[in-house]
Length: 126
Image (cartoon, rainbow, N blue to C red; front, side):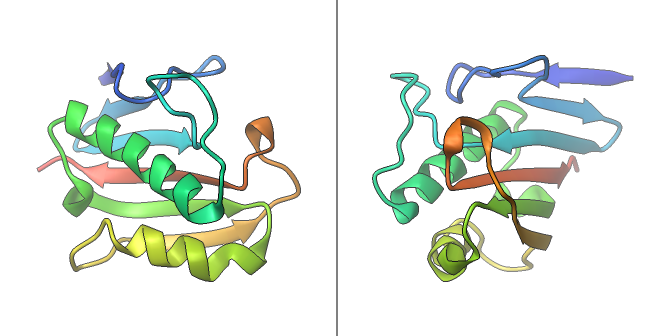
């Protein structure tokens, strides 16, 4: 059985998908981009702030499910330019304390709304 997780503290989906789906002991969070949930506007001033907004959006969905970044076991990072990897990685790392999740980071040709970074995660529900 699956449970849909949605919060107004993260951007509303821009297509036919849910912010997150809980299935068994796992929470699958859809890819988040740097949309400010309060204004609905993109927050893409620079790659660091864009990544912080993405991580804040992920955190909001995790919190709605009663979880934190400590529960994340897998993440996927999609970049429009691999040259931003170090900057994104630095910001991303600030949201985890230890026991980092498994991860892949890939460069793609284009992301939704022409953003520079999109991140999705899978978390364990303990």
